[in-house]
Amino acid sequence: MTVYQLKNDFLTVKIESLGAEVISVTNKDGVEFIWQANPNVWGRHAPVLFPIVGRLKDNHYYVDDQEYHMTQHGFARDQEFSLDSQSDSQLVLSLTTSEKSLEKYPYHFKLRVVYQLVKGTLQISYLVDSLEQSQEMYFSIGAHPGFAVPFEKGVNYEDFKVSVDPKETRTLIPINGETGNIDLNNEKKVDNQDFDLTHDAFVNDAIVYRLNEPTQVTIASPKSDRQVILDTGNAKFFGMWSSYPTEGNFMCIEPWWGIADKSDTDNQLKTKYGINHLAPGEQFEAYYSISVK
Image 1 (tube, one colour):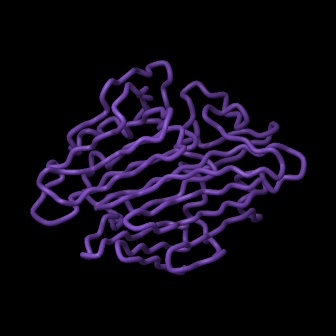
Image 2 (image 1 turned 120 degrees about the vertical axis):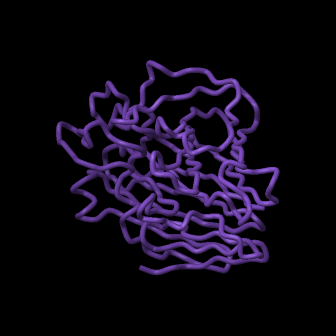
């Protein structure tokens, strides 16, 4: 495993080759904004979710009558990525098909994760290439960055508020906390998605909304000069999550291009709700950004 660093006058970012995962974002004052992966609470920082997002019903799916098994969020987060290129402000890491991946996922692919520093913003892109010769490729992808809250001493977790902009009515997609599957039969419209940050806000698992346009999700407090703003870019959904009932001083803001299985799924990957697909040789691009102040 290798740790890479990007740095400018505003931010220093560290990224592990294992999972292409951001493990640190600090500002020029040395303030850390990324959760530092306490294994007793949540042992990750900001995993990349591929080729599924969330949980499959009963942890399996079918492609052309062949059964495959895969655990929550897929396998990319636990794989060693290769270095494609690096400069002071940009890093490109990649993962491609292997014998091990084909046991879980029957498609030939290349996934590139691009990190770009622009002043106080970290821009992230996921480029998914189909290396298939004749069949369409089906996949989901997502981000899962966890932010350390509070951002500084003397401020409490409960002093922070989550704000979602622009202000508009969005569709809340419930998640069954026991199975991890979504319940589209009980979707509901929510006029304002802002809320005060408390640990029990996540008693029912992640808070998930459908997206129609780029959306800014901000974690901030009137008692702090520090804040995080995540722009969802071209994501189709986003989730907000923290551990419960085990309490951790972090919150995840998760832009997704895909989502967990429906409770009534037939487990066919090609008809999975929210799935993406590529013709042979095509490329898919997903992007979002993280800004800190």
